[in-house]
Length: 336
Image (cartoon, rainbow, N blue to C red; front, side, top):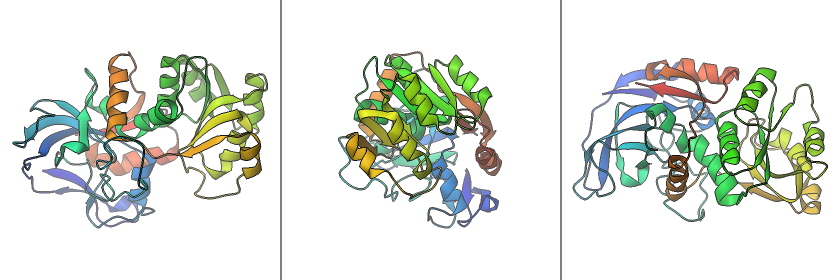
């Protein structure tokens, strides 16, 4: 079978298409024909060598496809089922009890990933896909979609009438926009591109802010909320944006610290966090049960993920290069 591997950590030029032997599932495993994947910042960091992995690692954490074969003890899935992968196969349900930043079992990082024509995994590594979705749509759920769902619904306990601020127009932000509108919330979104903000407005964004022309965007958020601040912030920038997010959130509000796009550490206004009694919560994706609940909500809605562009799996390096350009709106996908 074909697979896309990182010959050695340290750059997109190390990505190569190779042949791997197929395997058969054990008693509690399933064999899935992978049809699609989607790109995340985590995948890019692995490919660039910023996150350690093994030589010849099969890349990509997200995967969607069709069950081809099931082990004799499997009851959760049947041949022909459309499925989508989980980011942390070891985290089945409940709150996190161990540091989930340990990616030892995460596909495309600690173990071989989803950039292969076929994968054999434990049943914990997949859930059923949303009904009627194309495989590339389902492949956006594993990391970006579930992160937004957990931030707003599982941790944030969002309710109708709440106000959300989400930074940027990548996969997590647009999923947060869609989930927010589904839940009856008001959504404020930022970008450096007026064209992207116009697209976000068409998706239902209530307020758009260009952070390039409005560098102190927290003031604009406060103005849009009559000085109160937002209930929830989807914080994707990291240290260079967090202090403005603290300024923009209401007293007693909730900030989901998700991204590290501006770095891994920096000076944080801890006094403001205390003074405003803000709940600042770091999170990385979610459990299998969280994903199943998210998919249940998707099945009851007309939401479809926003896909900017789709590449062939053997053009993964080109897809990563496009991701780095920052020109995409929504998710970048891969298909065989």
